[in-house]
Length: 77
Length: 77
Length: 150
Length: 150
Image (cartoon, rainbow over all chains, first blue to last red; front, side):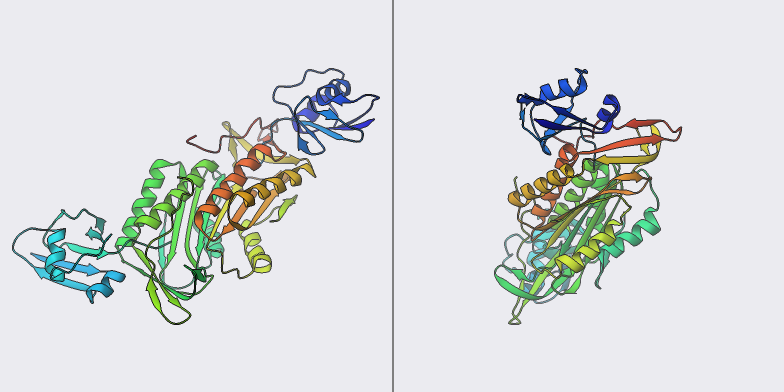
């Protein structure tokens, strides 16, 4: 299972990079993807997550070739 | 006392003219102005009235040189 | 906070651009603008409309609109506002009314623009007469309700 | 119902005029149009802002905006709608966002435009970074509340 991970805005600064990729044998939840990709970094409050560009909850399972993104509350408009 | 009366839109068609003037010795209410100026024509439902370009109630007294206007519900915008 | 009654056609976007360039200027406190444009439809109550004639009460119309604008500026944090309203003979697609509100934050601009339009619709002395394609004429009896869910 | 993300400045009134002329055309069923324009203020949280940088998530931003527009068209009787949003570096007074809704009656245009803006503000993945006059940079933490009285 190959999972692409992206970080945006202040979360990109916090993690220090904009992308990760992790290869894994079992199905992970979004929370586990965060832990693996960031090496258990503390997750900032209010962090949002999407899978394939749709908002999801933190217990959502992630499938092979999914794109997972982590970002702070949006501030557009 | 000289009172100028104006009719607008469908009320102008109903009365058959756009203006009236009545000369009177005592203070009249708006309702009495209607009765005098129109010779007691039936007042169409929902007719609105203004004195000096402000909306008023039908028991409002009318003073010398006031401008009284009668018109149907407004339909602008 | 100008109130303009026009008896000739106007182009809303041109009016807004000119107003912002010449009168509002570069006001960097403005973060939000809400605009309403009402245009003439060619159908009403199942009939095709050829011409719409707008009558008003010169003097009272301006007085009532000034009052509505003043109330809006009291109730919300507005930087400026503008009303333009047509009178006379209009053809389908012609702009009838333009209301614009400028503020720092969107809530004020949205709520004030809506307030001005709803009050204009119920208090400003304008009356519409429709001429149908068979040349029959009729006065519009009343405006439709503005707030959908109240 | 176009959704346009632009990385260069745009002129809202020019965009609207072009869109109405080339795409909407002379649609005589349109009786109401509500427009919201958000522009960059030069002050935020007491500090003067020199440059505002807007980041987004290409693909997800469009997907979320399309979803918001689809919901609006389901909920209200809209004839058309349009969203334009800037990304990249903006200067004070630059337009950030334009939302327009067209309908036969005003209630639909007003409510749908407001709905689109509030949802855009809370769901569309855009992020603002401010550069102050002392060159300090900071991310905007959260958007202000939209509905004032709820």
